[in-house]
Image (cartoon, rainbow, N blue to C red):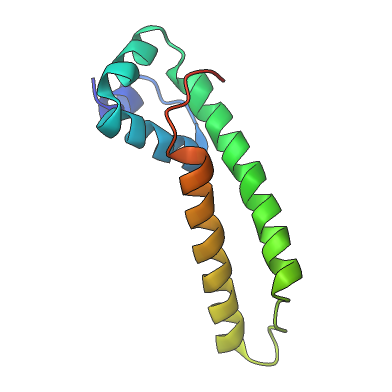
Length: 107
């Protein structure tokens, strides 16, 4: 059973990072993914991963803003967009490496 089939039969909201984790587990840890699906623990773990990763993202966003102060939007919009892009590039990559792309098995 693929994650797409699982979504059709059980429409459960797991969030952005939970969805990324489910796809990672399905591709890289198929046996564990099937076992967790059979045990019906997959969505609880995915929601837990999403919450854990979202909290970490918020922390990284705050730390990034302390180290690299946000430029004023009204002064130079392109500079603000560039700052936002770099913040999101850094924080999203870190969250994916440190919190999502890990084979969690317990919520």
